[in-house]
Image (cartoon, rainbow, N blue to C red; front, side, top):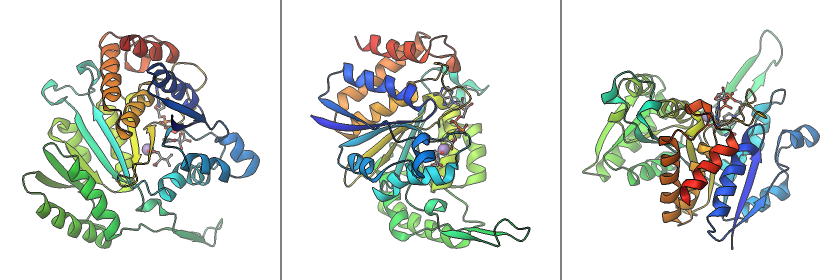
Length: 342
Ligand code: NAD
Ligand code: IPM
Ligand code: MN
């Protein structure tokens, strides 16, 4: 049996993860689930850490992880998140955050111009450095003279390996998104690595956009993009944008990956959504499509294709949650996908 660690987390995390696990279980793929139900804000409040060292070991010794979402009103979300999600990304060196966006149904696009609606792109987000390293500090904290510093770290190794991954996923093109016109040092390093990567990959259409223009171009014509490679923080922001272009956060899936070890943490792009938690209305498709990415990551390619086919059929039939125009509950929407699988 292949052990998959399941970390549901907070808010709608458990609601949507449950549907993804039910689906994988139903498919009889030889997976065994190790449920880590104590990784959450309650544990953080009680112990000061959202994830115990023992739980981290269970994660590390699994084949891969299915993750829901973390975050709760009233907790220090940066301290909590750094001890759970960012800890996994950094300590397991999951240096790629692969965030595909695909428009399953034309009616889900917020764009007026139907010729430009077709989103089928991947944000390849650098996931191990940048502004997320937590290097910095505060001087004269809690006074009117406070100084706060968060360093952005960019390394040759980090940038070149994520560019290599981006090119390995290109079907047509790769677009580098940065802010090298204003951020000189890291910007220069991204540009140097980019020139080397472009030279190594003839035959792939390469382009470069500054992040402000990229946000504009993504709204103007998302159909022009295939792979977009960018830094940790720009990837975070642009992947919510591409999610919305493809039907909303409820459907967006992601994979935190180390392509060398094959280890992955698979999670919907969305957070714990406290505004709708407990109502049973959260869209489980982001979690279910993350389960499809997990299948792909551990070599179950046919299962991944089957899940995507079932999602597409359920959405086409309008058998989905209210955020994407249906009237089903989370549970019913999960069941609708399972029914499509037969
Ligand atoms: P969010 O993604 O939780 O919610 C943004 C909006 O999208 C909300 O209106 C929410 O109701 C809606 N939404 C999200 N997922 C949905 C779904 N599956 N179905 C239907 N609607 C959905 O972002 P936020 O409100 O900025 O953050 C809430 C908490 O989640 C914060 O504590 C934040 O730090 C955390 N967060 C965690 C992760 C993660 O664990 N990977 C990601 C993002 C945010
Ligand atoms: C995401 C989230 C996280 C991030 C937060 C919760 C730290 O927004 O996975 O996109 O910024 O990476
Ligand atoms: Mn985010």
